[in-house]
Image (cartoon, rainbow, N blue to C red; front, side, top):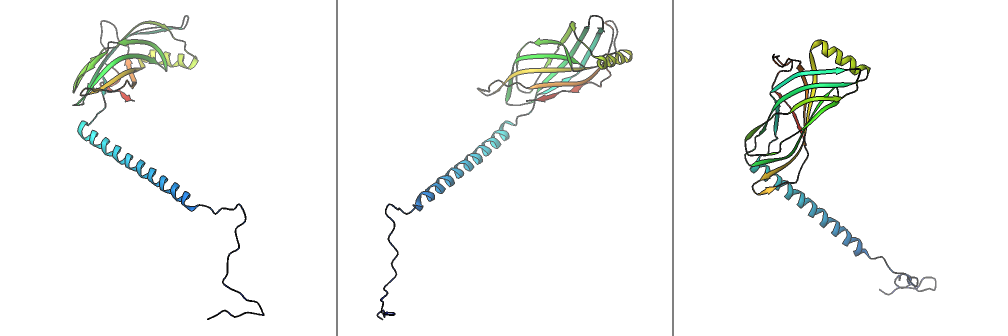
Length: 227
C-alpha cells in the first residue's frame, strides 16, 4: 500500500540523521576480548591451584612428614648463685635432650645448634652443640651444658622472685634451641630453615655436686618445635 501524504507533506521511511563529522561508534568487541582474557586467566589460576593441591596431597600421602620431637629427660642444676653487689650470676646446669626423627623417608641435617639458657626472661648462658645428620626413624641425644658466670642485672621485682626461689630451692629455667636445618628426601635436599625449639617451665631444684635431687618438674617434658 502506497504511503499517503499528510497535510500536503509526504513522509517516507524514517532515516536516522547522519553522524557528526569525526564521530566514530564505540567498538563493543574490545570489551568482549578483555572479558575473555580475564576469564581465561581465572581458569588457569584455578587449574594451577587444583594441580598444586593434588600434588601436595599425593606428596603427603607418600611421604607422611612428621614433626621432629625434642624432650628434656634429665636435668641437673648444681649451682645458681646471684650476688647483688656485682650482679654476677654463677651457674652449673646440664641437660639431656633426646631428639627423635620419626619420619620413614626424611633425613635431617642439623647444620647449627645453639642452646640458650634463660632465667626470668634474661639469657644468662649460651652454648653451641656439634652439628650432625640424623637418619630415618632415629634418635640422637643432645647434652647441652651451661657452666660459668655472667653479668645479669635484676630489677626489684626480679630480685624478689630470685630470693623467693632461692629460699624454696627451686628455680624456673627456660631452654631455647635455635637451629639451622635441611631436610633430605632421597637425593633432594631443601634449603636451610631456622626452626625454634622452646623448653619452657623447667622448675629445677638446686642439688650439690655429690648429692642428688629429684626435679620439681616431672620429666620427661616435651619441647615446642616451631618453624
